[in-house]
Amino acid sequence: MSARPKRLPSALLSESTQQELMENVVVFARDGSGIQLRQYQEQVALAVVESIIEEKGDSFVVVFPRQSGKNELQAHIEAYLLLWYSQVEAEMVKLSPTWKPQSLNAMRRLERVLKRNGLAWDRWVKESGYIYRVGSARIFFLSASPEAHIVGATASHLLEVDEAQDVTISKFDKDIAPMAASTNATRVFWGTAWTSRTLLARELRLARQAEEQDGRRRAFVLTAEQVMAEVPAYGRHVAEQVARLGRSHPMVRTQYYSEEIDGESGMFPERRLALMQGNHPRRAAPRPGYVYALLVDVAGEDEGKQNEDALFGTATSLVNPRRDSTALTVVEVELAGLADELVKAPVYRVVDRRDWAGVKHSRLYGVLKAQAEHWKARHLVIDATGVGAGLASFLEKALRGRVIPFIFSSATKSQLGWDFLSMIETGRFKDYAEMDKPRSTFNLQLSNCQMEIAAGPERKMKWGVPDGRRDAESGELVHDDWILSAALCAVLDEQAWGLAAPSLVVQAADPLDQIDREGFS
Image 1 (cartoon, helix red, strand yellow):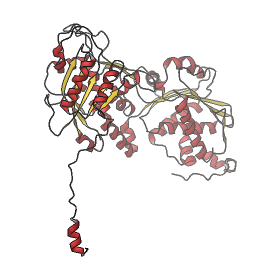
Image 2 (image 1 turned 135 degrees about the horizontal axis):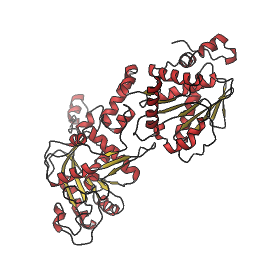
Image 3 (image 1 turned 30 degrees about the vertical axis):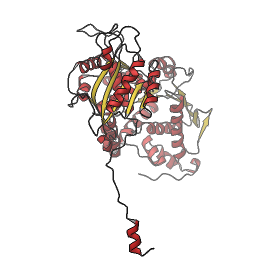
Image 4 (image 1 turned 180 degrees about the horizontal axis):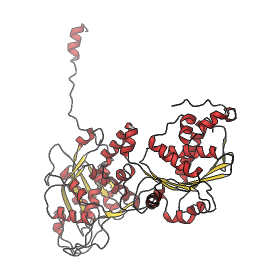
C-alpha cells in the first residue's frame, strides 16, 4: 500500500500527484485515504465509475451481506466522483429509506472520507445541511420514506438508492425514477436481500436480464463465504450469528447469505417442525433439581355454562367449544446452554400442556397459582393484553417477583415471532415425544400458522393462524392459542438465569487456637 500524501493544501500538490490519485477510484481510496478496497469492493467501484464516466447509463444492483463494507465503498465512490466532476456542473442524488438515522449516517461517512483524503480534504463544502459540493459537482442526500417530499431533484450523473429493499416500489416509481429519466444517469441499487417483492429484488431481476442481452455485468450479489475469503475475522462474526439465530433463520439467510425469502409462507414447515421435536417424555410433576417456567396465553371469559372438570384438565364439553382457550405450556429449563460461548442461552423442553375454555378469570387465578406452586415455577410469563391484565395483576401480587407480564401489540408480537424462530432454529425449543391430544392439537395449529413479512426497515412480521381457518378433516376452527403460549418462551431468554453451582463452605479458623499459638491472653 502506498503512503497517503501529506495533508498539504490540494493546490500545492503537484499535477502529477493529483493525476496519480485520480487514476481510478481504487487508487484514489488507497493512496488518497490509505484504504485498500477489498477485491469484491473494487469490482463494484470500477464498474459503477466506468458507467458514469463513459455515460453508459447502466443500472446496477449491489447486494452485500451486513457489515461487509457496502457503506464505506459508497462513500469512496461518491468522493471520487465529486473530485472527478469538480470542473463541470454535475449533480448526484442519494436516497435512503429514512432521513434519521440512515441519510445522516450516509452523510457522515462521506464527510469522513472527504476529510481523510489527501486531495479532497480542503476542497469540499456542505450546503443547506444535505448537499456536499466540490467545485461545481454536488451530491444531494434525500429521504425515500413514503411521506418525504422530494419531487424536483435531478440526477445528472448518478442516482443511488441505499437499502433499496426498504424503499417502496410505489415511492421509487412515482418520485425517484423521474430524477434520472432525461439524463441517462447511472443508477445503483444497494442493499441486502429480503423478500422477492421488494424494489431491490425487482431491480435485480431486471439487471440480470440486461446482463443476458449484452454480457456486461450489472448484478453484484455477495455471500458471507466470499467475504470470509478476504476477511477471516468476518467468519467469526457470522458464526456467532448462526449460533444465536440458526442458519435457516430468515435474518441469517437474507442478511448474510443474500438469499431471498418468500414474503408470505407457512411459519412452521416440516424442517422447522423436526427441529422442535424432542425425545423426552411428558411429565405430570417436576423433577428434583430442575428449573421450570409457565407460559400462559389468556383467552376471554365465557359467562355461559362451562365444564367444571376443565379446571383440572383439557376442556371438552363447552357451550362454545370453538372459541380460543387459555393455554398453559410448562417448560423445563436446561441451563447448561449458558456455558456455550456462542449460544449463551438455555434450552427449553416442553413437559406439559393444559388449556381452559370458557372459564372465569377469577377461577383461573386459583388454578394458575396452584400450577405455579405445583411446578415450583421460577417464572410465569403471562399474556397481560386487554382482558388478561387483571388476571396477570392478581398473579403478580400472589407470586411476587415470579410473574412476567407480556403485552401483545403489532411490534411486540413481531419481535416475539422472530425470537421464537431463533430459539427453534438453534435447537433450544423442544417438545415432548408423546403424540397425545394436546400435542396433536398443537401440531395442527403449527401446520396452519402463516407468516407475512412487511416491507420496510422495521422488518415487521405478522403471524398466526388466519381467522376462520378450519381443519380440512374435521371442519372445526383452528386457533393459535397454544402457539402463542409456546412462543412466550422467548421472553424467558431476557431473564438473568445464571448457572447453578454447589454451595461451598469454607471452614474458619478457631480464634482460641490462634490465641494459644501466638501467646495472646
